[in-house]
Amino acid sequence: MNTASAATRIVNVSAFVDWNAQLILTKIDFEAEPQKAATAAFRQTTRRIARCLAEIDENKRFRVAMRLYHGWHQGYEPTVNRKAAQIVIAQSDFATLSQRPNVIFSPNVEFGDKLIAATNRRLHRKLAIHLPNTVRRRFGTELEEKMVDTALAADLVATAYRDAGEWIVVVTEDDDLVPPVYVAEAALVGSEAKVVLLRKRAQMGMLILEDILRTG
Image (cartoon, rainbow, N blue to C red; front, side, top):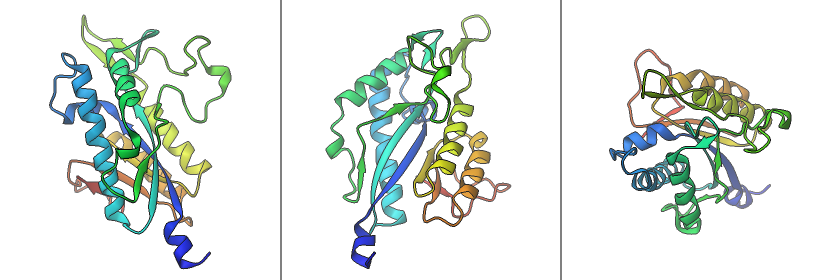
């Protein structure tokens, strides 16, 4: 492959997005205004990913496929945040979503309640997902997410081992996802692919995140 071809070759990127963290970063009350929060979170997240990739290598062309992880079902019922996210995705103009000319986003945005490497035998027959009931009652009316971080971790590691040429971006503020990022990085040793941990917070002193962490 000549230099010109290598420079223009499209690099596929899988972006694993901790959606709860992105909703919180909008500073919008997403329980009271789920649609407004989802719109802001989606716009903010895509801009951050595009900026991050363009800053890493402005000469490469990137195609980003996003997967969103959140408590998408309470029992078998889709949550208001899932409905809001689906509307935002359906209404988005993906051709103009990125403000960076070398970064484009795939319109095929997926939800993390259907796992990448799990068998179809484990799919719920009506919902066609692996993980219903990811929002549960904890104390009284208090709700909590279950299986969300581990779903993201499972998909992240599976992608790293199955698609060695694919870049990975993990968008989260949660240190619980650092271990699978480390494992994904190890899986890609020897390939041209990179693993990026994108978050707002600066590096924590006890974690060795050089060449992985990007803030912004």
